[in-house]
Picture (cartoon, helix red, strand yellow):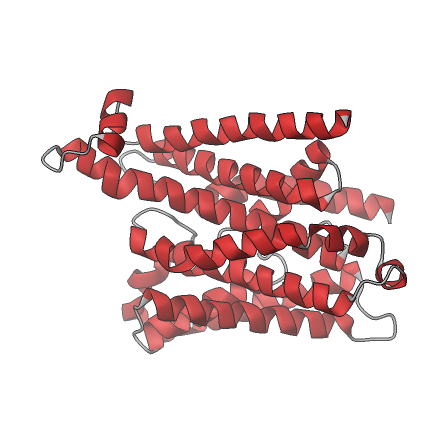
Length: 333
């Protein structure tokens, strides 16, 4: 009971930090606004006031997009780490983001597709194919799927899809400007319609991820143990795989390939809330949303009046953590 109360208290404290981060995303940037203007733009909107228009149509949607994508990538990362039993697993490392990125670039440049609904489904397809390829490659051999083989397979697929993406951009230089900024991972300039197209799928995936939390706890004990306790592991893996594809693919379709959140946040969540996925998943959602919001706020001040793509900021934060986890894993091995 004491542990449950402590975890609930920790989650409430992090929700407060998330709220403050959300408000900071609305107030701070190249142009800064005060509390009164922000409050009025939300609750007493006047379409004749320019500042309120900017906050209502740009800052608030941008904060919502950052929170949704940060939460989605973090949840996808923790599910991948549990499925593969690999602390380095994430949509960016295992090629899922790269597959989604390639298919979106191919559709946007080669076929001139601009509909968000179409790009979303194309991103889902790319993420799913990449995940299947990585799983098949990582499962080859007598010893089957191992943490090392899944990372190597993911690195290979990431490099392959990245080279395909670069080839398309080289062959069609006119389309390079259209997707170049998006390829770095950005939430700047994203319209509310973009997140509204994918948000229902993300929200359902968040709920289903928490619903299968107990099953993920059993799977964490090992597949043989889970089967011995009566779990239908294939269905659990398939469900988790679909959630990962939807969350990663939806995030890429809106903001491009934003990396490292799926690696960093699950480890922090488990450090704070333990290994029970009923707590890890909510912690991941809150921490992932907070990290991307704060990274986006910091990115606005580095190159004023221009902005640093938020994908660069998350890479700067996540790369040292990735190296630390990799070294620790090698040391244990």
